[in-house]
Image (tube, rainbow, N blue to C red):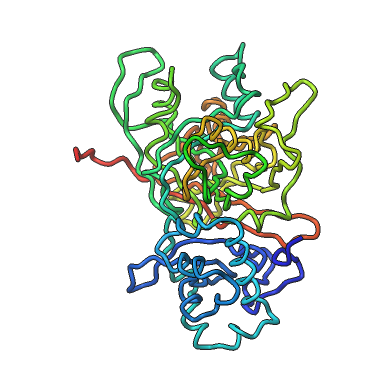
Amino acid sequence: MNVTNDPNLTSWIDSANETGCDFPIQNLPFGLFTVAGDDRPRIGVAIGDMVMDCGALGRRGLLDDHCEPAARDALAGTSLNEFLALGRMHWRAVRERMSALLRSDMPVLKDDMDAREACFFPLCEVELHLPMEVGDYTDFYASLSHATNIGSMFRPDNPLMPNWKHLPVGYHGRASSIVVSGTPIVRPAGQTIAADGADPTDGNVRLLDYELEVAFVMGPGNEMGDRIDIESSRDHLFGVMLMNDWSARDIQKWEYQPLGPFNAKNFATTVSPWIVTLDALEPFMVDGPPRTDDDPANLDYLVSEKDFGVDIDLTVSIASEGMRDAGVEPTLISRGNYADMYWTMSQMLAHHTSTGCPMRPGDMYASGTVSGTTEDSRGCLLERTWRGQNPITLGDGTERKFLADGDEVIIRGWCQAEGAARIGFGDCRGVVVPARERVQA
Ligand code: MN
């Protein structure tokens, strides 16, 4: 195990040592923040209830002799893209240095009050932003339970398409509408058709849904024409975020044939503000992917002895506006685990680039809805309420088939394992706000 993952490490920042804290010294996730009175975004690392300003660390010489000047300069930037492009050796050197600076027994930063003043801000006082500029975004469909559930609703005789166990199915999504946790989600409008087969209409979406997903952030990437070999995926994958793939089911039902999702998915995608690195996730990596004797063998480019899943516990909760006003706890809607997915992040990447499609630093791709085999592990309302047939009841007594205006969807994720410190992802949340009077831009 890498020294940065040692469960016995503690930080001189006391809040990082508290039980249940998402950001202990073993985590060190990267994000982007601004402070009051200064619009320039800064790269930060979350530790306890504080954020550490990476650019400020570098300016004080605290990264010198441990990290290359290229890494120090990239961390002084206004987005993570340049740092993502540097690659795994730099990421690891920076992680090791930051871990050392924050350790209880290391006086360098702990005893330098000037530097502490300049480099640390309370998380509750900063504004968090999307950590990187996302050039391209792809969404997969990697959960067997999700694909089978959705398939059986629409094609009861033939739920799983013949390609599904041979390749990770995906579609190219929309990068321009990826937003950070906390951004309000305006109820979209679009073309839908009523169930009775009447003429299509243009109007506000009625069947608004969330999808519980995990997103992956690209590092260096590949030249056009080259492939990323499944064995070298770790060199290209920087980290993981939680994601809500907001979905308009009534648009989707009408538009999806024959080319798949389009407007049903392009109006908003929310991600959690922190990228948890693969280095931090190492203690939680498990064998992957699960296969049975009935499953077909996969082609060589999708198979690696070293392939891995990650044991990430995930929950979705909903709080209506009334519940928030009354101080009622959000209602837990489902609970899943990313390790249940049929296709791994490395398989998705190997497949995505099998044609030579170039991936660039900051590109993002996502797992698809994380659903397990049980009813309470279904990762979207379409499945959870079975197309609205079995509504769920919220803490205020109201029922939901799909999302109502004012509803807040809260996705949480964390990892825990024997012999490792628990780490968390930070919330991925968004409130649905009423549809706008539509303006022609
Ligand atoms: Mn999705």
